[in-house]
Image 1 (cartoon, rainbow, N blue to C red):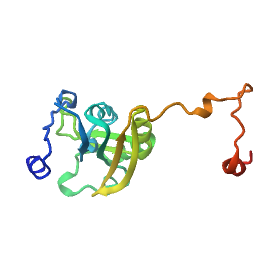
Image 2 (image 1 turned 180 degrees about the vertical axis):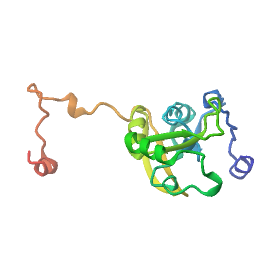
Image 3 (image 1 turned 135 degrees about the vertical axis):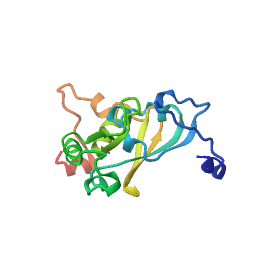
Image 4 (image 1 turned 180 degrees about the horizontal axis):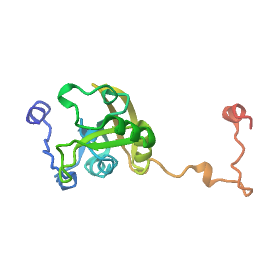
Length: 185
């Protein structure tokens, strides 16, 4: 942290166990969160309030996740055997798109473990935040972790005008042009 602050003239912020207790004096143009969401339960992983609150308008949020395609599917190295129950983790991931198991040495107060996040689960979660645009999802771009790049822009997702301009019969207006011909309208 100190190296990054000095090397990039950045403002370091040291974390708290409870992320909601973090305090920031200003907003930032760029937020980087590496290898954190990969170890948090769904409630924490799906909570984008904190990064959004501390990111300036038109700022960028970059974080990493881990999908089941990563090393979580391969046998755990000897020093990590027994930290999580791999079969149950993968079963939950296949069923819901998100899976989490607390490491055995972790406690309820310091809840830390193995989290698998599918791109689909992440997209559904991010749809709750109309001021966040996903710019990229890069599989295994940071070792075995996927890199997600978000862009903050207030009011980006407004209701689709096609649904507001429905015809009295309840059908959307006839599509015209190339897309209309392509879809047979």
